[in-house]
Image (cartoon, rainbow, N blue to C red; front, side, top):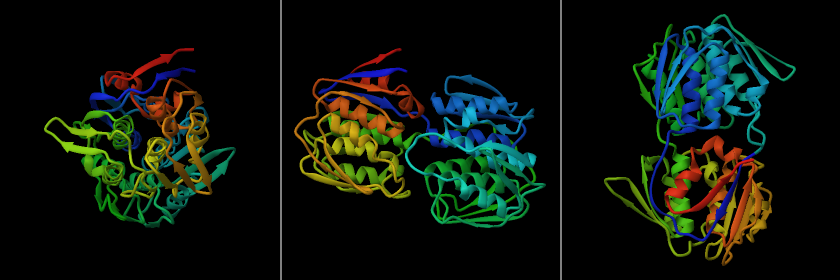
Length: 418
């Protein structure tokens, strides 16, 4: 497994361009199963999870060609309706093929998912929703076996907003008979991007981005000429924090600030300055950030996917910050690694108290999940001395060539190959 070697203590300056959103690309790729034809998708990031989804579609019979950031996916010859454990165990988003397979082909066999170990993320909400639409579902030997003659519209209520659950039901409902209403739906921009892609194929969807989504099923979906995925808001937010934590000055291109209002407000409270320019968003960090409290919430609140990165910045802030994690119950695994670098953090339940220290010290650390790995990179960038981060395959799941982008900003980083 590769490692990252980081020599910290350098303010980062320069320009960085944000890639396509992984969490939009994956459901859109899964949605190509709903339509027989050739799909042209642009701004698809080169990421491990994306390659996993592509391999999953290939095993089902899809033909995929890749040119730069454009994927051509031909779904005319789908013959296999199984998502096997060896792929699904590495990426939870594989569950997103369940709804499309069931809606178009009337059957699916999908392994129960794996992915980052950041807490329990049950798929029962997906299953209950599909059962209400008429699917017969059995759980056997770690697999979901689903059958349906044709799904039918119904009302689905989620006890808690679930992004992948909303996406799975929305995709399935696009080809169902009648109207489906999803109540307490997830509002994330990635959900809206998927809805826009489905609409470009001929789906009838209203309310995406609100808590109530209405889908009127159609008989057929047809691929559009081309579709461009939205920029990755979490990658953009991560570079904002990097600028703020390092005292840097970074121009971020292809940044949709409307997706990051909660993050930007908290960074402003920490002393970070934002300037809109013709070229992009300029982010200027203070000499030392101010301590700020955060509480993760479903969109449009502060995203759980930015909590670890923000905590890394708070380790050197002036004062004490309180960080509450309300989305996942096991998302403080980076705390132990930050402590190895000299951070003063205590955890009680879902609340972390971070007392800012003068300086972090480089140390060997281990990434435990995708966003935790990003927090360790930030910590390494602001620490004194040398930091080695192990198990960075987590990082490669969600950030496209992050080490190269940081090097272009003046960071001293080496990827150590094993």
